[in-house]
Every structure is written in C-alpha cells, then in structure tokens.
Amino acid sequence: MAGLARLRAFACRAPIVLLAGTLLAAGCRQDMHDQPKYTTYAPSSFFANGASARPPVPNSVARGSLQGDALLDSGMENGAMAARFPFAVTADLLGRGRSRFDAFCSPCHDRTGSGNGMVVQRGYKRPTSFHEPRLRDSAPGYFFQAITKGFGVMPSYATQIPDVKDRWAVVAYIRALQLSQNATLADVPAAARAELQREAQR
Image (tube, rainbow, N blue to C red; front, top):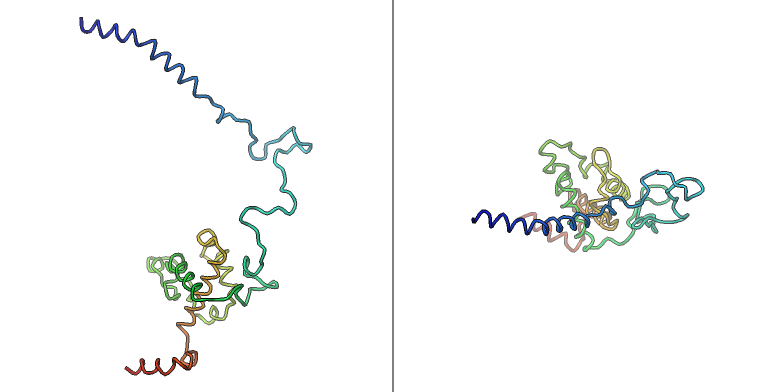
C-alpha cells in the first residue's frame, strides 16, 4: 500500500516536474552564442570595399599609448640614447627605483647589480655586471631602452613596470648602485670625508 501511495504521489507531481523542465529549457536561449558579429578578416557587404574591419581614424592614439614626451617615453633624444634624465633625481625617486629593482631586477642582477641573482645561482645565464666599465659609461637612455624592449636573453619588462617614470626610477637606482660600488674618497663631500676616514680607522 505504501508503495502504491508513493507511485500515485509521483504520478501527480510528474506533470509539474515536466512543465518546469520545459520552461527551464526554453529559457536557455543561444542569443549570446549566436549573436550577429564579424570574425577577424570576415568579408562584409555593408562597406564598399567589402571589408568588415575599419582602419583607425587618422592621428588616433590607442588608450595608454600617448607619447607626448619623447625623452620620457622612449629614452631617446635627437636620435640617440638619452644622456640625461627627463626629471630631477630625488631621494624619493631613488627609493621607488630601489623597490622596483628589488622586485623585478634583483632575481637576475642581485641587489648590488653584480649579476649573481638567485635565478643565476640556479642555472640561468648570468647578466653582465652593472659595474663593468662599458655599462658604467652607458647613457641612462640605454638602461631605459633595455628595460622597455629587453636585451639579449632578458625579455622586455614593460609589462611588469608599465609606468615609464618607474622605469626611469630603476635607471636612477642602477646609477646609484654603480656609484656605490665604484666611488672613491674624492667623491665623498668634504664635510663628510673626515668622518668617513675616522670610521675606516676604527
């Protein structure tokens, strides 16, 4: 009897379940999948030249690609690697450069710029030390270009460091590293030289 009662109850509910399933299936329309659109390079009868893609408006600039300052945006000046920075180098700028350098450059270049970073210790090709005479004599624009476009086995870091000002900050910090590893006593301000000499004699 109990089994018969359950069977009758199911039979009563079956039309409701079937109706709900039908309504649910009807709601699954394919408009988003079958929307009218052109795939890449698909022809079109709408335009006279038969192409669906339209060329950019003359002098248009893609969002985020405006380059209003050639020195700042490219590291180039008068067709050559820029020999100067596009803005003043300050302590705050060096601090920002250090944070970006430690995050993105030190794995290969190590924190002193000698080229013995952690990935190098694990088998990656060793980069040239920033303290080599060739790189110490290189223009700031050279380092900016290397960060932006890559050099040798080093890929571009434009994606990791998208702000060009941050890239210049890294260049400034590289210059500070080069100075720190190759400075002489004559480079120390006279006011601090005596104190430094006392420290060295202790």
